[in-house]
Length: 135
Image (cartoon, rainbow, N blue to C red; front, side, top):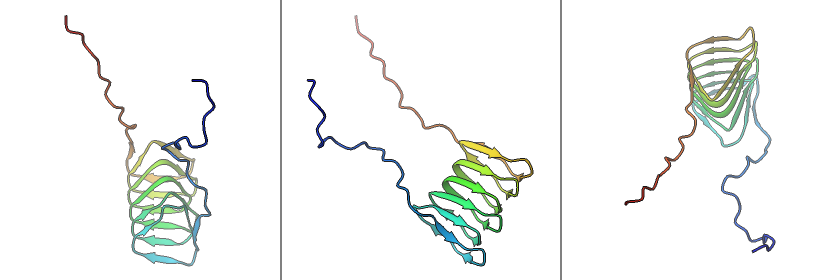
């Protein structure tokens, strides 16, 4: 009953995100097509296509013409298209033309944002069951 937990105990179901080095797209690089990675991406170049990454940082010289799906997005450059991420931060140098779906959004003074801000609904909780005793 009061025994110590063994090392063979089952691991937790939700594992923390593994830290890895971010991929870098340099300032003089232009990618035409979709880009997908489970890792992080630092973008100083331009992507003409859709992005699906873990975390995205767009530098001041970076830009995306397409949709973005990520866990977190920080924008210092330009985005034309839809953004869907839990956390979105627009720095003062950011220019975004498109809708942003988010759980958390922060916009620095000076940032340009033209579109709609759409709050993501929190995860649906399982309905609770109530037991009624028959008399």
